[in-house]
Image 1 (cartoon, rainbow, N blue to C red):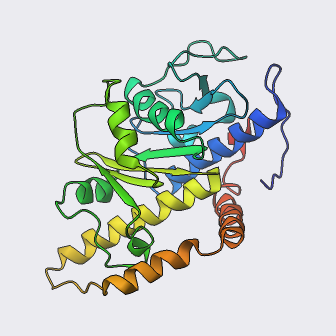
Image 2: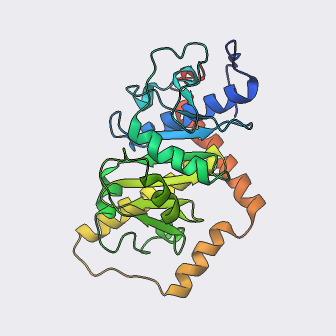
Length: 260
């Protein structure tokens, strides 16, 4: 991450964790920048390196545009808070723990998980046919988008197994009547996944609102387009990093206090 002001990690937090905290706080700010928030009710998490299976999630009640590296709460896969300096009094939303711990337990390849409740995302989640391949953004997810049926507010830990089973090997999923869920091998990749999925949902709702017949490209074109997004892994990784640096420039002129 390009930084204009380097803030040293507080006592008890090593450099690797502090970098992830800064990047995750920036991701919260970017989700707010692109208006993908739902007040205090959605979540973004990131796995920390090491054998302990700890991950970071938001302090319940902190708005996304306020998020700082020090606001993030370290928890284990059982929802226990791992005490670090400045963590006393912080809370974790139970439904957020259920959804995010499910993915982190089962998918070690997904370092970062984003869950949103946007208007467009909920609207597509309520449509029987789900996401339609009517835009280039949507075709990114052609044949690699999962669906999970609504079971109520995600407080039942038994639901974790069904969430994981429905996600399968994909990185993106629509939670029926609920919202969107994506994961990424890195924080920059997760950001691009939710950006494209959200834009695809916005385009679908806008196109359908016009009442005209929709144009859906042939299946072979949709499949070809999806393959173009993931054809070359080094290029994909470099593209994610480039887009991430560009995204950071959207928030850095406004504030850099997310690094505190």
